Image 1 (tube, helix red, strand yellow):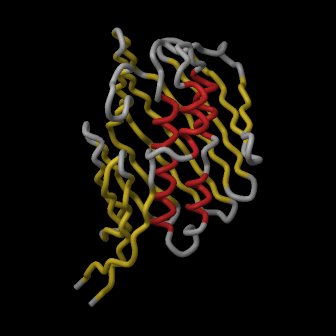
Image 2: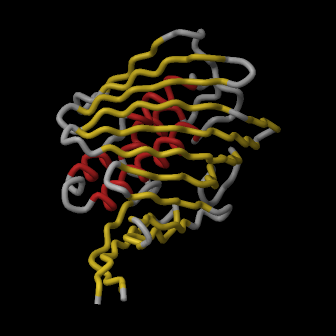
Length: 244
């Protein structure tokens, strides 16, 4: 019979401040005309969670996959936070390069379409760690007074220098109220589907209140579980399936 033994807890604070808020968020939070590609580029530069993931790729790939999912959710949130109206768009085909001021990380965001929906492709190079490639769509947006709602499906592939690779597909929706006095101005909900080349697959679900649930499985066994909230941070609890 198979049992599950709690091994360790990896705490991943996804949206509770941190480096991304100091770059993408703080840089543009007061601007009413945000360039969508530039905002996405700066959000992509917050690669701390990919450096965390690199520590687990060889021996605990489920923890690496969890950290990669944290990276994507953080990027998606920071790319949407503070937007108060329709963002400005680069011309189709324009390639925008954004560089970190504190590290050698570089992001390239290419605008590929305006209609019927805005689309971007992006690439991030983290020297000595990983290369990120992906695409983003702005499939729906509604601006009414101080309220904003956006739907931004993302597809991301992350290939680490040691051969580990993760793929994440998310369908997240963002709701913002720019005159909210208490609590976060930007709320995230939706789901992300996770997989890697170590036979791990998973799903991360964010409800309307920002509560997070989900699991990562290998074969028929649960090897980790997501718990927590976006405001307080996400806990990924790892399990090892042992035959008794």
